[in-house]
Image (cartoon, rainbow over the protein chains, first blue to last red):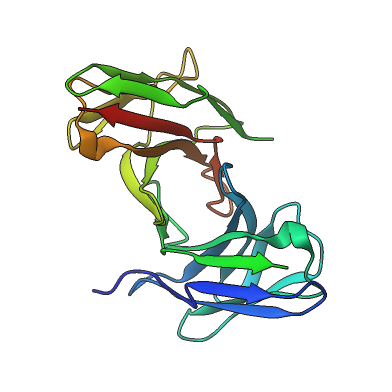
Length: 114
Length: 113
């Protein structure tokens, strides 16, 4: 059983550019969530995908968008990058139902916007 | 909305000292509660969890009890080690339509020999 994997691990982009981050969910998990963790802060929920559809969204602008594929892997896309988008982006996978549902996190992608 | 408040750090302890990191929460319904740990340069690892009132989660010598009456989930360990140095996040997950996790701001723990 493989865990949650994210790519790339580190990335540097210029303000105004677009970026795509990738996540492979843990085997058997059909739900993927994305979080943004600014330096020294707790992770903030961006959105969640369940069976290829957005299933919930946090307080992030529309330039943050995502996709989930039939194999439950996912992408996070950010357009028109701003300096404040510099953060660790975490992907988490889980089963969507059940009282004992827990999220398993990947190692994250460190995005730096210059 | 849901929120988690945890004590600010950093917390510096000597090896073998007793650890308490306070955590309180606000939520509608009956959330599941978690403690996650983040080692330097790494992602989040689930440390322990509790899914209903009075449950005690435990792992690696760490414990936390789900207290509905005080809306708390304090993390404790009887004897910390240098290897416990990390950032600890208290978190909750609602039981509604989707399992969004709401995190506290984290407490950095430094254990010195």
